[in-house]
Image 1 (cartoon, rainbow, N blue to C red):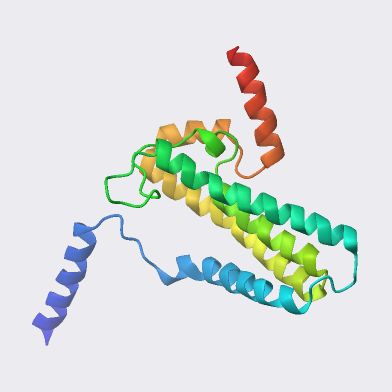
Image 2 (image 1 turned 135 degrees about the vertical axis):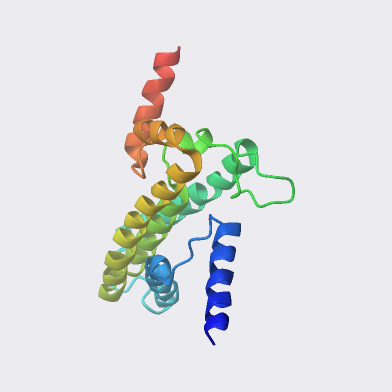
Length: 188
């Protein structure tokens, strides 16, 4: 019995040592589960509560934000594919190089910003209290998840990512565009 416990412990140690990047813990996925489920519920409920209060202006603003979601959500893949130097046969998310061009020259977390924009768009399109409550769960949860992403990316890219963090805002698109344009003028 003692030997079996010892073998089990050694097996766990060996598997951790053979893959040091593996830090899988259920508690790390709780925020993802929360905002993921809330977003799925929002997507379903928008069909039931579409334009609930018949506020046309909010409806159209929601559609515009939905278009912005699609646009911003598509740009990271393009930048990762073009500049990320992922190994042959691997997905674009397995970048080996810090990407600070394209959308990543404007904001650090465009994928995550796109999920927040989707939640806001669905809320405006439905105008229902349930959707507002769900958005109040989704938006801060997604935003605070980017802090964990920054920590992980610092571990991967080190001081170069810290410098990048000082140059490019987390998700403030307007400030990011302003800062990017200012930097472009300085280069001329």
